[in-house]
Length: 180
Ligand SMILES: Cc1cc2nc3c(=O)[nH]c(=O)nc-3n(C[C@H](O)[C@H](O)[C@H](O)COP(=O)(O)O)c2cc1C
Image (cartoon, rainbow, N blue to C red):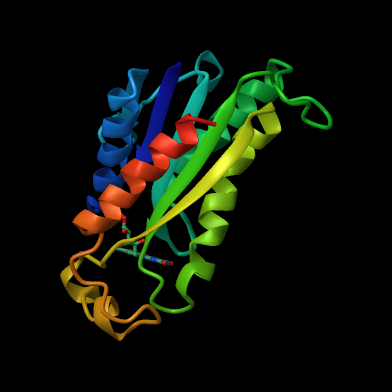
């Protein structure tokens, strides 16, 4: 399969998750294009060229990072313009997507990550991709002035996460997803 991993990572946690996804995809012998929107500000990508898309971000104020939001908004506009987003969003055969995010959940736990995952999924759902999974990984707050959120929040002590075990879980889960 031709697979795209499109993600935004501001402080590096989601990049660790993305790297685990990349490893799983390559281990399973698929072709991979991996794009970190942070390093590729003028990303031009046609998601319809891929059989399977992973799309991910850190969670900031309940949503994906604004560079990824901007990219998804621009893609939506161009697919609408080209007539590729149709009423009732009929399913496209053999097009699948999975969304993932890393989040700190200091205030309301996973509930503040769910809107981010749902947001990212919508472009693909609109296009007719089947959304096969949502992967949520805990990620510590990296900025110095936010560090107490990593141990005083709703999820308890999340310092050091995503850790090796978190990343191994992602890798195994992605292998499972790709067998569907
Ligand atoms: C400015 C800022 C805002 C954040 N807002 C949220 C939030 O609303 N909800 C949440 O669950 N985590 C929040 N976090 C925690 C991040 O989502 C978490 O650390 C994530 O792993 C960061 O991913 P990244 O390193 O790929 O950027 C925030 C972190 C920062 C730095």
